[in-house]
Amino acid sequence: MHALILVDIQNDFMPDGALPVPGAYDVVPVANALIEKFDLVVATQDWHPANHKSFASNHPGRAPGDTIDLDGLDQILWPDHCVQNTHGAEFVPGLNVDAIDEVFRKGTDLRIDSYSGFFDNGHRRATGLAAFLKKQRVDRVVVAGVATDYCVKWTALDALREGFNVAVVLDGCRGVEMAAGDTERAVAAMRAAGARIVTSREIEA
Ligand code: VGL
Ligand code: ZN
Image (cartoon, rainbow, N blue to C red; front, side, top):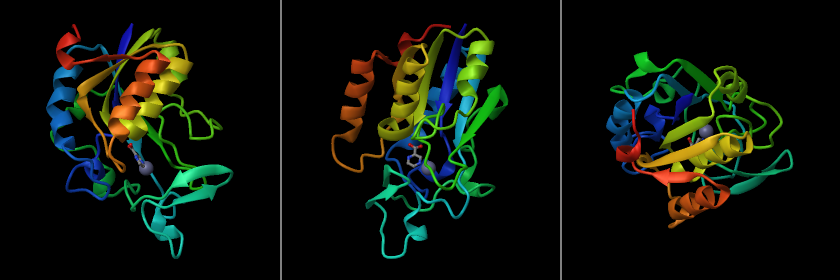
């Protein structure tokens, strides 16, 4: 069984959102085309409480882009984004949400961030995604969404760790590129860990 994992295709990650990812609207038609090729489609949704510790606004004197120690982990501080039950946290209009079989929300624990759709950044708690996929007898996952250099990357790396065969659809992903070259480095890291880097045309129904 093959599954499509759509990572964080949410308003706040679009170019006009709170944590803009350049070109991110372009992943929507690619995601919709991919959806047609899969029997099982899951999506992750960044879903933070307003007082989440990954928000610079919750650390007086800090600015987005700063790095702090959060509970023993390096944490980049972000603009407020994907706050639960806000427009910014909703899936992008135009994404075929009716085709999504299950949504896995992450980043809900205010003390730890969660880039991967599988685990928080400290691998302390699972979201249930791995168990769900294994129960459906999934052996191969195809990943697309945003951001290539954060949530796509960590989702793909955790999928490999969980023993899935992983392909990342490059034209279905965009990076936030906080530092120039981050997206390219993320792609290299995913490839080095064993992910196949493909284009959407290579994905067969
Ligand atoms: C993401 C930064 C903070 C992502 C989520 O979806 O890549 N990046 N939260
Ligand atoms: Zn987030």
